[in-house]
Image 1 (cartoon, rainbow, N blue to C red):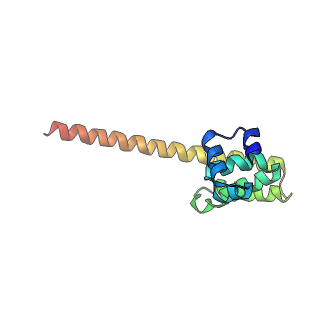
Image 2: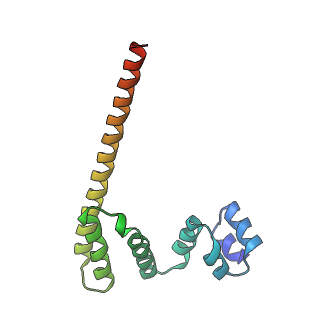
Image 3: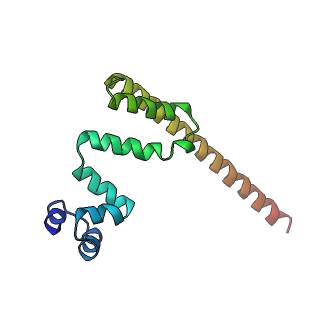
Length: 130
């Protein structure tokens, strides 16, 4: 395991943790921090396995997705993995999901800015009336 970690330039914290706490890669997989698992997965999994893993991760938060473009992208990804959707269909679904994400971020940013501006106005009024 030390050789694999060195070969793949594991970060110092991850290397030390793995060497001190694990004797096999299975133990790493079973107990490592999520961000370390993603790093291991990106190095150890095949292309298809990475696609399956990313879909698995996204599916775990599907219940939080409110825009149908996002959930549709997951459905198209599954179909693509099963050979029932083309690369073009996947690209279109991915683009739509990114549009949904950008819209959500923009909406949240605008809402936060409005809240901050409102709070600043209230602070000014309170200062004025003191």
